[in-house]
Amino acid sequence: MKHVVVCQNLAGHRQDFIVDAFLNSTALVAFSEIGDKTQLLALILAARYHKSIPIIWGIFIATVANHALAAGVGHFVSGLALTTWMPWIVAIAFIALGLWILIPDKMDDDEAPKRDYGPFLTTLIAFFLAEMGDKTQVATVFLGAKYEDAFAWVVLGTTFGMMLANVPAVLFGDKVLKVVPMKIVRYVASGLFIAIGLYSFWQIFSS
Image 1: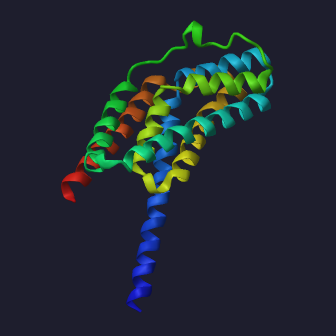
Image 2: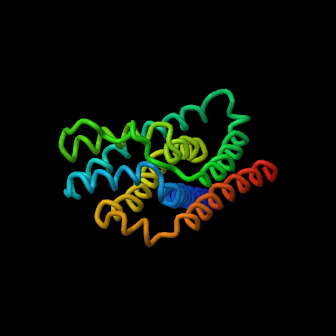
């Protein structure tokens, strides 16, 4: 009987961990993507092609590939010998990301797609490259490290967050950016990252 109770408790804890990983990944990426250069890229592509479906598919596949790579790096690093220091690194990184998000992003001219391979392939290539070293990719690396046992759920969550932010931009254009108060969104995103960083410190000191 005790064995059954222990198994049930472990299953419940595992389920809570997965839900936590998915929801945090979704919220953090969705908020930090608002006004980010990749969302501006989505607006540029939507204005150029006027074909929302292939652009959305391009964003989706590029995000899955890029964030799977990023979360994989986080998962790999968390399993190295520096495991003792990893909780500290992750906590500091989340607070640093929270401060980074307060800096407004812009789309540089050399990051805009120049070659035309059609809406789907252009979006796929442009989004994958634009995400390299971006806030959301860096966040995904540290989410992968924090939730190392829920790798797939981190990728699902960050991808869902990217789609929540970018699909409306593709469908409705810059009307979205005019309605959404950028400064407030940046403060909310920053607050979420810093809160998770502080919570991570609390977990370190209470363990």
